[in-house]
Amino acid sequence: MEMSSQRELLRASPAWSIPELAGEITAALVGTGPALSFGEVRTRTSPNEIAIVIGTSGSTGLIKEVAFTRSALIASAQASNKFIGATPGAQWSLLLPVTHIAAVNVIIRSMELGTLPVDLRNFDGDYPRVDFTSIVPTQLFRALNSDARLLQHLQSTSAVLVGGAALAPALRAQAKAAGINIVETYGMTETCGGCVYEGQALSGVEFAINERGVIEIRGSVLASDYLNSSELFHLEHGWFTTNDLGEINDGKLRVLGRADDVIISGGENLSLTAIEATLSIRFPDLECAAFAVNDLQWGQALHIAIVGRASETDISHYLEAALGEIAKPKGIHTMESLPLLGIGKVDRSTLAKMVGNE
Image (cartoon, rainbow, N blue to C red; front, side):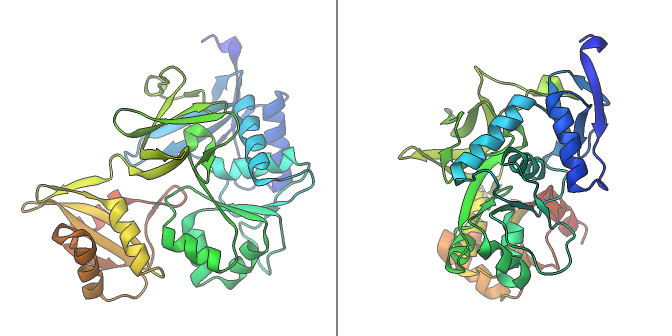
């Protein structure tokens, strides 16, 4: 690509205020300023049509510089506001770090409504009331179990988008009982964040399940490229293939878990997502993560990391009774917090290394 078709790619500063961020994002979208990058992005120029670039890394640790056009970002913001019934003048709050697409989305959705989000990332005091906000399941868990200030804030909103990681049914039920109007979202950085709300595709978005049972997404919200690794960005007839398994029931998408979260222990397949979902039913006040450790006897041995108080015997017996002897963990580890990959996703690789080094 000729350099003349390139524009400057400016790294967003973590010190920028919300008005400064909004101004720079606006300039990037309309083309009067440089394109903006958020997160780990090393590239310094981008194609003219690219407005925002998000650096993201998955379980492999490979950083991908995900590039978006103005039209994709605006389509995502408008479709999101439409789904939740947000009208001009409505207020969002920002509770997510501005290194991820989810936070950038909050700012653009707000600008589409003629407002700016209330910045609550490092806020001290009682949270003000807003109409909408966006969080990850870990924040919802903390609101329901230890952060009364955040709980009150979530209860006062018209809707709370929850995404970035799987939302346990028990946690959702707990939130509903507390009077929080949850909107469960599904998506990834490459789909401009959440693009399926409550199992329904946003306007301009389609989903399908391929022959391997993997979810595919098509529509106006898709990213255009990985700036640093274009060879890895593939669209087949406009469809982006995710790493998640799913099924469609009555026209709604149900996410079953990551395609790569199934381990083989003692010759039997075991879903780590299923382990976590099962535990959340019996122990709703417990943060937990299932992961595998390489083992000479089992091949991959199931281990559980927990944050909170629970009897290891109770956990072990419950899993064995619910899912069979294969689900009996080979180790249960109590931690102060779970290591995260990005916002909301548990870093299972780090957990495995921690246990392997013990």
